[in-house]
Length: 459
Image (cartoon, rainbow, N blue to C red; front, side, top):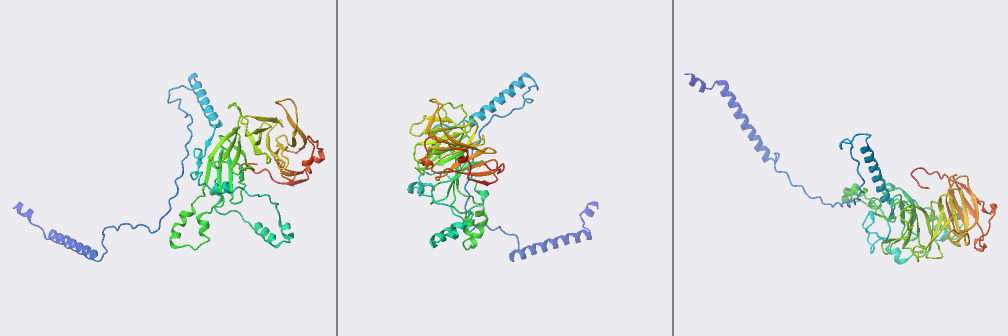
């Protein structure tokens, strides 16, 4: 009787099971109706390929980092603090770090191929580089007098006046944002244009010996797009193109600061660079190679070079100045031959040759003087000869640079926040070793200028 009672279902349980069955039937019917109406879950559609193609950004070339000695833990190695073993370990680590720094700063002798010393930027192709047209066609004369607003108003020639007005209306380069034109990896110490007028090519030398090249004629896709009507496909790629960077090439030619460089007035494809690693190098843009022109025979000597210039009348004579107050002259046809003159007891920050009379040299020194020298008259014993000192002018603070022009004027910049113009008339008729008076050495014009440019700008 008990088993029969357990198998019987109460009215309440029977009603509950009926409700469950009716609910399941209703849910199934709703699912079928939704599926037939296309509202139910189905297979996920395959993603369609975009109709527009996005340009892939060029992969950033990784620069290999130099391996330096790693510090190790004395505690983990079981070495007690202040023990003799710990002291020897610290001394060994210090010596290792100093040796690594010395090797890093030691100059590189011998020829260098540009393809082997490239730092960043597009790959260098000497047969199809952006300098090829200039190397082939040569450099046209760029010696034109400057003019201002008053000169433009006084110009009577209509065609010349229109040209001058057009040049006066020139604006700053807007092809790329300034913060995208990182022409060198480190702080720039020397900067200049290639003498060609067909294309604005900018060269720059930085603190670690890298030389950067930038073609300022290139335009960013975003700047070109602003001048045209945008299509629907172009709108989709606008954000990506706005992030584009200019084509810049950098080469590691020296191991220390490139203090100055000079394009040969006789060959536009030759660039001479000077460096704090005590060397002068010739960069041949046609051969895509860099060769050493001058360096001390003893590689342990530290004789940083602050400037370099080539005689406009001789394609073989190269002049340079050093931070220890010396000026040198070398003949590129006979490597290893050099004449050294000590022209100051302190640093010579800059010097210049008179373009019309290159036997006259102007030097700017940390001893606050600007001096004029005549190489035609030498005095002193062999090996210690000095050119004749024509005259000197002393400033209140150190003089950073002196620059000649073809008219015989010398412009100087000094830390007393002045730019001085010294005018020397008839230099071509001066006798050898002429002695100038204090009045003749005095500046003809003094311009106030803030030369304290700050920590991020090299003066």
